[in-house]
Image 1 (cartoon, rainbow, N blue to C red):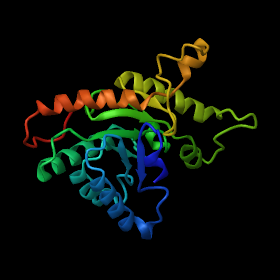
Image 2 (spheres, helix red, strand yellow):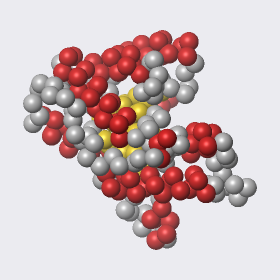
Image 3 (tube, rainbow, N blue to C red):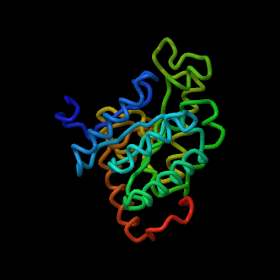
Image 4 (cartoon, rainbow, N blue to C red):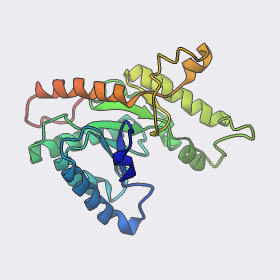
Length: 231
């Protein structure tokens, strides 16, 4: 409730880490009900469960009819996961009478060691609004600390962060470090040093909305029939 009343750029409903396995169905129903009660609100994003879990498809089936602004895919292990999500969203949009391509995607793309094998997200789907950096889960998967005694990222985590920046630039989408109050657009940061600006992975959700509006205009020109996964 506080998040909805705040001036946050977007509200994220979490169905993954914050929800115990036994509570997943109830949380999914609650998220769908919240989306229904706030129909037309343009800033609601839902973090679903990872693709390799039993909750992934039920999450999509419950959420697609309610048309969230975007789906946040955690534990994205590469372009294949993103392409599969695009395929599933498109099939459900067609089946449920939702405009094809109207639901965007944000991908948490550095949460596992497997996710670092291939980060070529360019051209996978026009739904992609941003790539997100996840340090703590990656550190846990690697069995290392995320930060050193000075608070800086340890070398493998810093390398993953740099890889995300490059992948996002290649895919022409923002790279985000967190989902909190994010204000700085990556090419901006005028008051920062050139080095900090080059490595800053923050972007405004306003830029995501701009990308989303462009994507929605494109989706209206797409055929309404499902012809396989978007590329």
